[in-house]
Length: 144
Image (tube, rainbow, N blue to C red):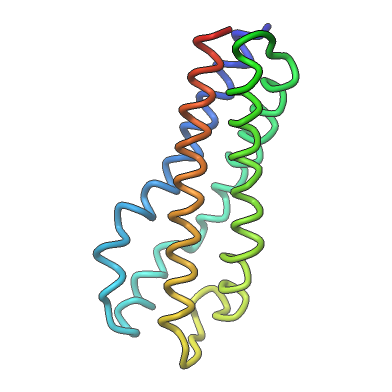
């Protein structure tokens, strides 16, 4: 059972990393864009909220792995769960307020550059956390 849960946690964490890594990869090209071009590019994220299903599933799977892990797998499994959970703190504390303020980037106030930076770097922080979780899930699976 532990190996099945480990595989599930590994796959879901890897899938959660995909959209997060995409944000990081495109960041250098998006950051210098002027306001109107940035708003145009932001339209590609409509519908990305469905990726949250994978993140929620990864939270559940890593929690399950942390609960059932023993021995050397306990610590990396707990760290993986904590990292995935922390992405929610980053989202609700930094990303979501920007989404609300900009109406999901359809209405941008004068301080849009500060909001852009906050939005982009919050996604980068989440990507780092999910990558760390992926490494820890892998270590937990290998140790189990």
